[in-house]
Amino acid sequence: MKKALWLLGVLLVSAIVILATVDFNRFGKDTVYVQISDVASVKETKLDSGEMIKRYWYKLPAYNENGNLTEVEFSAAKELRKNAYLMLYIKDGNEVTSYDEVQLTDIPQKAKEKLEG
Image (cartoon, rainbow, N blue to C red; front, top):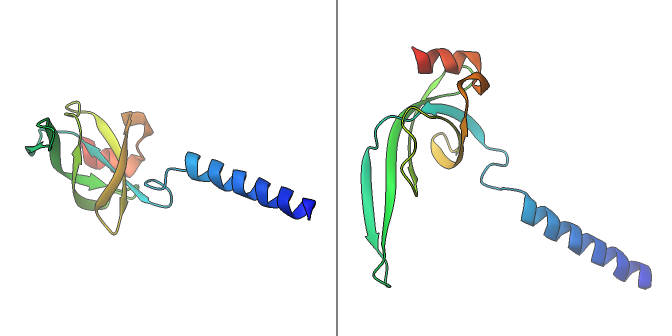
């Protein structure tokens, strides 16, 4: 009985650690690369508290590691740095779930050629 409770405790702690550390917005997603240009639009939302929240929307061409084009639209809580390169995590073809800024040297060659082209 004690072994079963101990094993259950270990499994529970392991599950909590996994859930706390794995970013499911990135796990198992495809990646594409973009270069930030101008903001497509800024949308302001007024909260019940009266605070105004801004979302910056971007609509850009994105390229996968093979250089294939995908049009993506995504938002950010802050204005992204112009000319920055991003690796976008996408699902269902073009739904952006997360992003990371990357250096041009980190981008696969075929995608880099399309972005520079």
